[in-house]
Every structure is written in structure tokens, then in C-alpha cells.
Amino acid sequence: EESKIEEEEEEEEEEEMELDENKENDLKELSKLQDSLLEKATGFEENKGWLTAKDKPEEDDDEDLGIVGDDFGDGKDDFGGTDEESVDEEKEAAADEAERQASAKQVQTFILPTAEELEEEEKNVVAPAERNERIRAIIATLADFKTLREEGRPRKDYRSLLLSDLCAYYEYNEFLMGHLMELMPYGELLDMLDAQESKRPVTIRANTLKTRRRDLAQTLINRGVNLDPIGKWSKVGLVVYNTSVPLGATPEYLAGQYMLQGASSFVPVMALAPKPGERVLDMCAAPGGKSAYLAALMKNTGMLMSNDASKERTKALTANLHRLGVHNAVVSNYDGMAFPKVMGNFDRVLLDAPCSGTGVVSKDQTVKHSKDESEILKIAEVQKKLLLAAIDSCDSSSKTGGYIVYSTCSVLVQENEWVVDYALKKRDVKLVHLGVDIGKNGFTRINKYRFDSSMSQTKRYYPHTHNMDGFFVAKIQKLSSRIKMPKEEQVFETGSDGEEDEPAAEEENNLSDDAEETEESVEEAPAKESDNPEMGSNSETDRTNNIEPTSDITSDKKLKLKSKSKKKKIKLKKNAVESPADG
Image 1 (cartoon, helix red, strand yellow):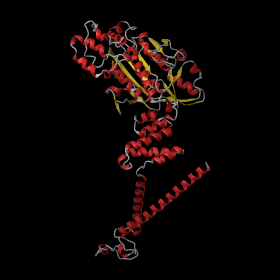
Image 2 (tube, helix red, strand yellow):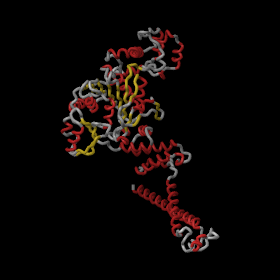
Image 3 (cartoon, one colour):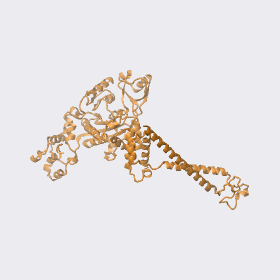
Image 4 (cartoon, one colour):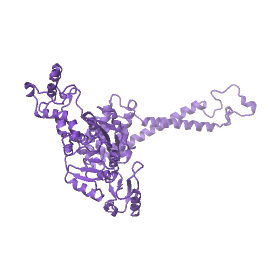
């Protein structure tokens, strides 16, 4: 260690010596530049005290007026100024020119470190300040790449170094940081990463079932709580700056007058906007903050189904609903994907889906290095099934509703726009405006992903712009109970009563039982859903596993479909729907 310290001190001394030498060279160049400018400006010979000038005019008109010119050596020039003033002006001009040249030298081409230097960095610990300085230098280079880049080095080399430096400085893994770099410009990305390092302000929601926000704020201020309204966009939110009493143990909290709740979780409930007397489903309700807000907007009327798949979490859900004075809620413990079989025909459905938590890194720092691609894809698949189940649980013929709100506490595209776009292709739904003023529009295109043009109706929230946890919210309107089919399958015909013809013997052997059941559910689901909500829609697993997308149909089968006559079209339709075993 002592040898390393000595080596570092020697390197610092060498760097200081190099800096001193550079300063001396700059001063020499500056003095030469000043001398040359002075010679050009004054026009005198090397002997400055000599009276004769280079460009002396033959006649001096000022002599007739009694004004003595500079050519006579008395310090007066032909314009009334002194020789000393002109020299001072030239010195200032020379100093400005030297400063400009020095600043130009500072904005130099950023030279990427060599492979040997990078290997040396891996062995030795790089100071955080030095790495942060290099991060900002790379971002500046990428902003003006043509001017500042190293000759012959592509942009991907700079991005690769930036990725590794960001991962080392902020302690993210490369997968997650790579996806975050795609979301926004690099300068804004640094602001978001810095904001994720600090916790968001504590926010509470006034429970309008028991009190008003103004009265609650006055009571808490008297107890020593420093707070303010959360903003114009919320009528029930309060942000707490500091407090002399624990917010989770005040008499007002125990009496259910407020709920400790993040500001970003207000938005999904505000977007759903339930009305009194409606049937509302909160598919993933625990620990109960959103359910209680829904009940407050419904004024404790109608019916609120608060469901959660975890039986352990339903205990906290039940306790919070009791404390907050909610009387119109029913707590259930079902898997959300199977909920359409349990109950349907809800006017509105709220799905705050389980996610990776990449928007709440400030609460859980382990997210930085614990998420990988396989886990994100698994979560996205669950979210797709939950969203389709939420849509199937909603009643499209509702006079006041027919809306579904999908939200996550993630900022990744794979869990947000990707999932919503999948639902738009599978169900007869459309995106509508949230009705909330704040938030950035969702992506309609980003890198290799292209989404529906209406995706701009969704909203994104970031910690560095809205000072709240990262969040995504989309509001969907269900138009009908029709299940969308791939284009190739829509050309097939069925009988007038919706029943299919009996398949030929050789083709019947190629069909799996799952495929036959799927076809029956596709044809009969719209009619049954309106008549019997319990049997009106199948489980999401059956839909996603058995109805394969168009890309899974082989080219041979496509040719076979075109070659058959109209009488056998229904048979070919069953062949087109492959079982998972057929692949």
C-alpha cells in the first residue's frame, strides 16, 4: 500500500510538472502574441522612442488647428487620445485573444483510453470524482460527435465506455443501465440517476370519508408537522418536509384521517375516476391505499372488490380498510389471471400490476443489480395475462364505465408500452386520455419497438421531473367483448349458428384437445360473456397458450390453407390453430 501511495504521489507530481510546463509555454505564447499585436498597432520601428512612424502622412491637417499630433512625440494622437490608452486597449485585446485560445484548447478531442489503460483501471480503484468527470466528458463528446470525437473511433466505442462508467459509478448492472440509456438523452439520464439516489418526499392522502384536507393540515401543523399541498393536480395530497412526531402513530392516523401513500399512486385512481354506485374491481389491492381512495371517490356506495393473490397481504389490506372507514369493500383472495371466472361485469377495473420496481430504486437499492432480461420477460408475460384478465372482467356495455386503468412502478418499456400494445392487438379496446394534467407522454416508438400511435395517451412519471417515484399509467376503454384474431384466421367461415362443421378423419387426428376447446371459446365467448358472467370468458392461460400468433403458422400450412375449397375452410381453421406441442 505504501508503494502504491508513493507511485500515486509521483504521478501527481509529474502531472503538476506537466501543468506548470504547459502554463509557462502558454505565457510565452501570450507574450509573443502581445508583442506582435503591439508592433502592428503602433506602426513604430523596433526603437519605440523614435519619433518617426512607418506610415507617417505627408501633411498633418491637425497642425493648422493648433492640435499637436502623435507624430511629434508629445503623447497626443490625432484623435485626442494618448499613446498609453491605445496600448492598454491593445493589451486587453491580446489578453482576450489568449483567453479564447486557452478555452479552445480546453475543448479538445476526447481520447478514449486504450485497452491496457482499461485493464489497469480494473486492477486499481478509480476515484469516483475522476469517473464522474469522464462520464460528463463522454456525454459532451457524444453531443458534438463530429467535432470532438477521436479520429477513427465509432460512436459505439464511446457508448460502451459510457455504459461501463455509469454501471461502476451508480452500481447498476449492464442490462438495466443499457435499457435506461434508451429512455432519454444522456444528460437527462444523469439527472434521473442522481434523483434515484435520494428518497422522495413523504406524502400523505387525506381520507375524505372522515375529514377534509384543510382541517387535517391544520391539526398536523399544530402537532409540529411542516407540510404543504402536494400540488394543484391533487385535492387530497399533502407533502411533509419534516415532523417532530411519527406520522404512523398520531391520533389522526390511528383514527383513519390520512394514509401514508406515495404521490405517484394517486394518479391511477384519479385516472379511473369511479362514480358512486358503480361496481369496481381493484385486482391487486394490497396494502389498500388505492382501494381506500377508490372507496372515498365512490362515497362508500356501490361495490368495491378488493382482491389480492397473496393471502398474507390481505391481512394488511383488511386492517387498512377498517381503519379508514371503508364500508363498501369486499376483500377476496384469488389469482388475478383467473378472476374472469370468479366474477365479471365490473364497470371499472384498476390493475396496479406487479413489476420489477425500476421506478422505485430509491426505496430498494437491490433493484440496481438484481434484475436481468429473463426476469423482466417473465414479469412482462404475467402482466400481459393480468391485463387481458382485467379487460375480460370489465363490462363493455356499462352505461357509466367500461374503463380499465393499467399502472406499474417501473420505467422499462417492456413492462409498460409493450404490455399495453399487446392488449390493443388482442382485445377490442382503445386508449383514452387519463384526465390528469401532469406526466410525460408514453413512447410510440423507441429503438426497435414500434407501438400504436395512441400510445401517446399514456403517461410516464420520473423522479427528476415530477419529484415522485417512477410510474406508468394507461387508461383503456373496452369497446366490445370481441376477441381479436390474427388476420389469416379471420378469413375462415363458420355456420350461421356459430357451430363448426365436423372435421375430416385425417385432419381430426392432427388437432389437440386444447386447440378444439380454444376454438369453441373463441366463437362462443362474446355471446356467453353478456349472458353469464361466470362462464362468459375463459381463463387467460387458455387464451395465451392455445391461440398461437400468425407468425407461428408454417409456410407449408399457409399454402395448404389457400389450396382448400370453401367447404373445407372451417377444417383448415382448426389446423391453423396449433397446440403448444406442435410448436
